Image (tube, rainbow, N blue to C red; front, top):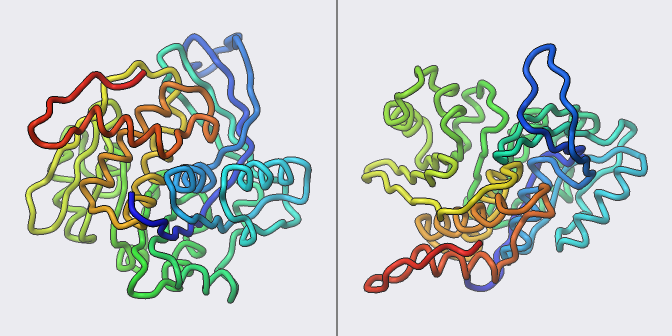
Length: 315
């Protein structure tokens, strides 16, 4: 990446309570977990950590509760290099995520929003930081009104990336503000009302609403789709996953950082895929996010320059 660009992430911050289980429990089923961990999480906070570790000057806009968890999460973000002066403390409990991770590294997550539910439109200081940023990155774990207000605060030089997760209908006002939409296959189909198995049709439909769609496909990689151009598939490095909790968030944060630092879209997606492949080999959310040097090394062996064959991805 080039000189540090600036990223503002508006979104959620949670305390993650994660348990390791042999499989995801079904209705009425009780399982014994082999371990439990507590760590920083939330889609917004995870993406902010990923952007900061990827080399961007990153600010996080959100809310924590006036409790011990809020203090710990603020410290964790600061330690990871994220600016937290835009992170408000409110009179609601800090958000919590209950995460089950199975033996294949797949997960099921239930989120209690807590303080995330009271994130509001940015204040003057927050609007000024957004207006000066290269990239604004948001998700849907906070009220959509706050996301819309943040997007309206940007200037023409600020790209707005929306990771439409968790899946939810989007109002026309929000659609009109999106520069880059990042979705997984389930979110893409939900947004379009398209039946399973018709991802190409869903992507085409999404491009009628936004200029760029990045479709993440887990271990199959990602597809970069732009209006007026053929879609480009970026394969993911082949690795053995132990915990996929932060894969998507790592991808989004690194893509945002790469674009803020002057990389083009294809290179940003490659870097995001490289970083996500490292994150899934580790446990936890923010704890699993790789450094810029680790991501570059994985990128170099997976997507080498023309004339040099790919090497085996780093474990």
